[in-house]
Picture 1: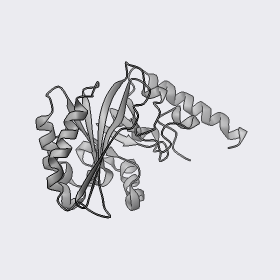
Picture 2: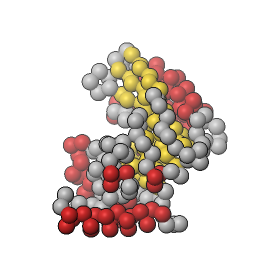
Picture 3: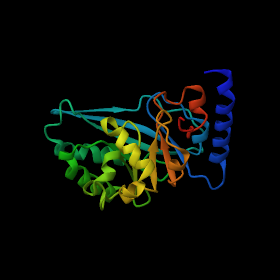
Picture 4: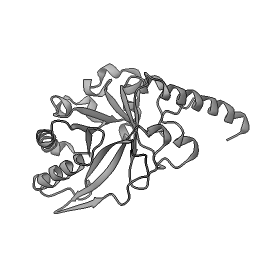
Length: 247
């Protein structure tokens, strides 16, 4: 990066930090996977991976978080359960794993200080009915004072069968790592958001500083979650959750 380009970048970051600190600014929450640091702007609230479950073939491997991130006692924590469904070796009987997932979600809810718990599960189309019934069961078994957040693949936002009547208190579409549909999905998100499912338009959404949108896209949402591939350990990336879109 040249010295000539550095000053405008710093000015942009400073402006964004001021916006994030404004009283009426939408909350921005960092996702903290293993090894991630808590960025200063996410001190009020963080979404912290608590457990990872891998469903593959006839096995189900579970791995609890190795080390809890350093954070102030005042930080509100939303525990996250990540359920990975192998695409190379799909689970033979995913239904048999239901009780394990529900139990892990209830355990995660017990560690919540934000009043939320989050299920991060990328189900395949053939697993859609299982996923929807799983969300319904988790919501029914959670304490009434704990709200259920679920992440959603971006392409689900174009399919009512995934999201109509989903028994979650919050749906968080992930507008990053969108694979081979990245270009058309970005175009929809940027230019025709009204065609997205209602759950994906204005409530909450997930972004990445490595795949930025124009600020007006972020500003549609009442709450944003942020995933950083560098675990919030690199310079400017850790300073602001909402970098400017590339020219």
